[in-house]
Image 1 (cartoon, one colour):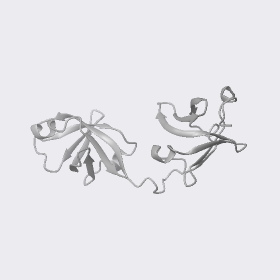
Image 2: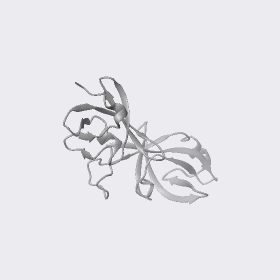
Image 3: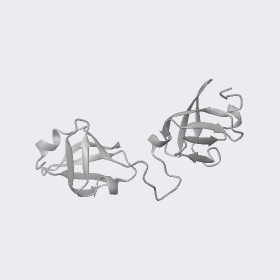
Image 4: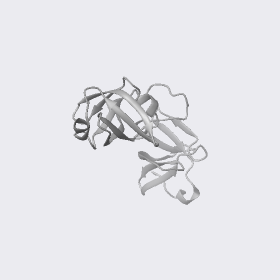
Length: 169
């Protein structure tokens, strides 16, 4: 599956390097020298150089030798081919696409709703859950989301008491 991993920013220097806006938590893997990336128009980009300059990732791509060539790609979104079902080093690490569509249940087995989005915030992620009474945002922390079963598309939630009257029945 192709996942968004970055956006090409401004040209840097005259040799075809560009600044990269990261949209991945694994830049060392997604942008390694030799990595193949795809654009929304299915253009293939192969990373030939990468370095960090003043905290900003700079990449060079095969066949792009000067500033003019890289400037034509400014604001281009880049995608990587990712196996979202591959085992992760951290068992509590999930791709957003694995969580969307999961059905949530309370600990007593009552259906709560369906995950429609995952909102990434600096402190923690939030699960956006569509219930019969509207959307509910639940912090994606172990105390409130004790069980995630990706294979069964089932998540157990302990919504805060403020949501006690929200359920599917």
